[in-house]
Image (cartoon, rainbow, N blue to C red; front, side, top):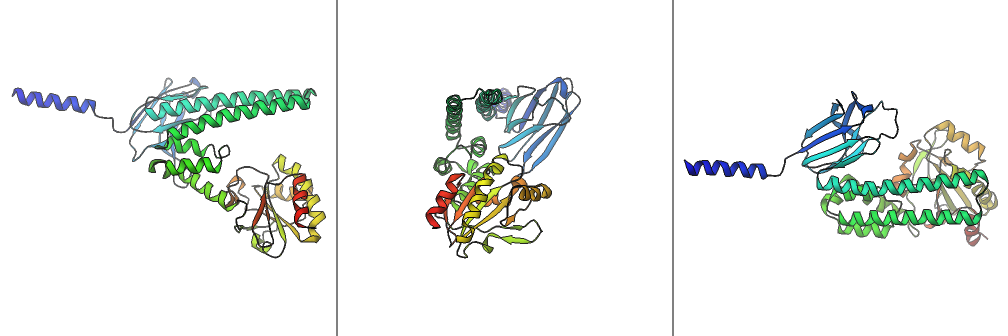
Length: 369
């Protein structure tokens, strides 16, 4: 009997020491969320947010319990809160007890990956706060007329330094988390700041949990798109409706013996509108010398697109699938900011990219005498 009792006690001890199966989220929320629904969401393979559970905040508290097949990123979201400083909270759904606080200073922790996520989130939040403050000071001096070229250069230097520090800290974090989904998530959020070489090195060293996550796939697709848009690559065709609704393709203009300038823009994009006079000037000067422009718009409002074409004196072919940032061109060419441009030779090879202002005409002058 004594041996049996000892065996039972040992079994109980082992059970109590066994890792917890499933996640147990214990949350606190701002008083403004009391009585409102909190939704636990994840991203599906189509990269759409879907709710997997929900609960009501009561007396400033809420909780979720569940299991998942693998460690995934989650989001605690809500609606109906006027205070914009209270934002949804990103978490990691992994086995263990997770502590979450949703208020003007979101906090998550309790498990290794959530602790890690909180640290890098704090780094990025602090960096963005400094960058926003710098931008505000810049605008104030600009409006007051006290922004001299020397001061503007100081602002640019300080902003670049903040960006460099933020990027370096994110890259270090990513390299330290090449075995998990959090590292993949952070990498997918820093595509604009890291070079293709840096991202490729990370992906080559990453574990399957990193590479095979939806965020790892995002990075892989982006790197493939960068190759398609690199100088020396042959163009990839795009087919979309023109303003009249007729489908046109890049192939209707590329490979026909002309140099083709592909201009990715949108009517709502201020920098695009400021760049357009330079494109108009280049088109007017070289259109009779074997030069064509094709505009690919990231608009979602057709009337705004049509009005933009008219108001900006655009007379060359235009296409748009009216999907905004979901435009097919974003995936095909890896475009994450506009204006963005490609210059194609008469055979369709990319010979220059992201030309702006005077550089457009200077580059064309080298090819079109």
